[in-house]
Amino acid sequence: MEPLQIAEKIKERFPEEALAIREFRGQVSVTVKKDRIRDICRFLHDEPDLFFDYPVDLCGVDYMGMKESRFEVVYHLYSIKHRHALRLKAEVPEKDARIDSVLPVWAGVNWHERECYDMFGISFTGHPDMRRVLLPEDWEGHPLRKDYPVKGPEKEWSGFLDVLERSKKYRRFDWQG
Image 1 (tube, one colour):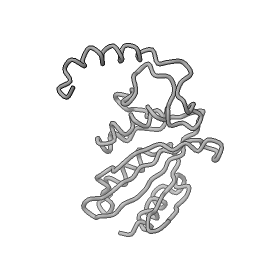
Image 2: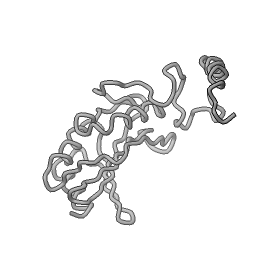
Image 3: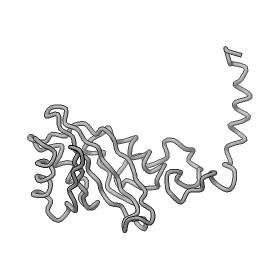
Image 4: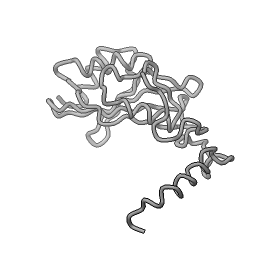
């Protein structure tokens, strides 16, 4: 099935939620409302003609000052059986930077959702382990937001000195030096 046909199926099934369909160089993006993201993903997974069984990637985008909804969560989906791909986008406002987790649909998005939370501060409702995955738990801010300082936080991370001390302690195990 062609990507535009898949997009039309989404629009038929979820007419109120499908906001936009865009095609560029053979790649199709469907922008949807965030409120029913799990239902839309369940449809894409369970519908035999679609069977999107592989979530290639999930990432966040910050459109600070460019769009009404500051953030987007972007899902790159693929059907191994049918060999078709689709990009699904859900707009997430800054004031309520939350969206439902699609972990019940695809277990493989676990760390992707956590990374999106860690880097952008977008929380995934229903995720069983919504905590940072790349940065320490006590890190302040979200580094991929456009308003994050280029030089990092103004004050030094409290665990920095501890990391330096541990590196000195474990240097004696360095087999190359």
